[in-house]
Length: 307
Image (cartoon, rainbow, N blue to C red; front, side, top):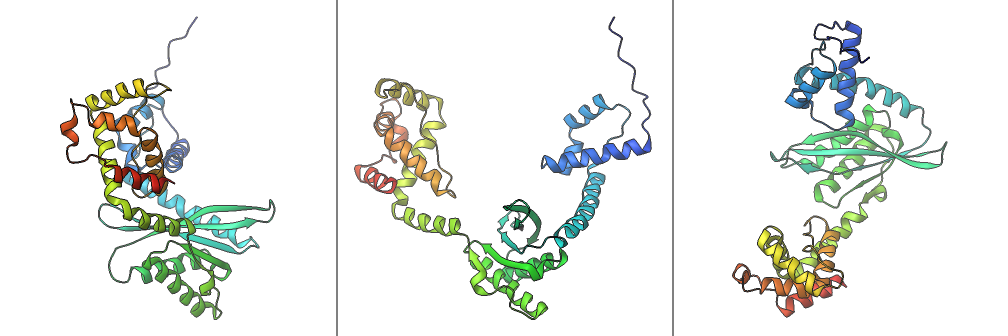
């Protein structure tokens, strides 16, 4: 016989168990990269009430404090861990801005694990710098402070950043501060590296500027086709009649900060060129593309860049 569920609305939870739940909730938010305000969402509140009716869910402010407390503990454990490692370290850092133009810079630590003979990477810390004059020096000083706080400033081997002027200034400032603090040239200019992928990205971006008008035309056409049910249906109609493998969706739209996605857009568009041409010249929707028709010269540009 199935027993009726126990009434748990008045369930009493011990103080120790409540602290354990608080810790579990905090770890969950961190591991899933969720904001601390997630605990005040209606869905999460209902979930916790259904699972643990007697538990009083903490506010977002309290959870934020628990996260910071946990960071202090982990920070000390991490310092102890790094002090026992015999290897030198390399760091990489990059930055981005939020909608308020507040700059955030994550610092990643890289080392070779001698026990397993493999490279390992871990997030060391991140800091924020407001844009404006002196950003590069501010980043260099912040990097120096972090490395010193973790006790590894004397064991830095290389630093890798993008090729932006602020990043290059930050590397030089870090090298100067390390030299001044330790009395030896720990980070010479030869060990200040530029990210090869970022440098390659800048080169490709400069090359794409040569045919920017053709690229913009193609991107606008694909956005227009993909954003409208009627235009998309017409594209599918032509793909069924012209493409030997059956119905196809319009080519994907690139992300302008990722050159490889632009290459994919080129490749897909070239493969489906005839279908795109028939779609944008179809009498039912041709008026939508009157100012954006791809000329033979545009297609030649796209073909040349794809190759």
